[in-house]
Length: 84
Image (cartoon, rainbow, N blue to C red):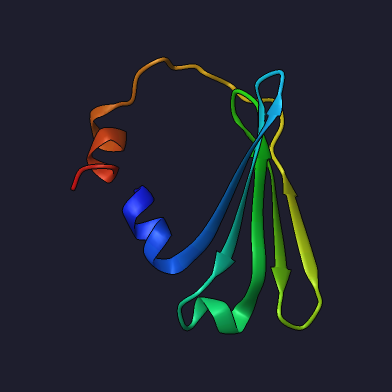
């Protein structure tokens, strides 16, 4: 939800060409701004990496690989998890 992101983060989206993108989020609300210096997401067709930089100078890198698109649809139980 972009509106919620904009309420809680300064957003910097970059199109890096060839379908690659980068989204940098800088927290502007408490408690996020007390914990994280920045959150960066990068990918192409799918999210590939998340970099979390905290206020103490530590960094956590999460790498997603071997994406699977099967099954092509969610089960009823999975669909209910995303229901509002």
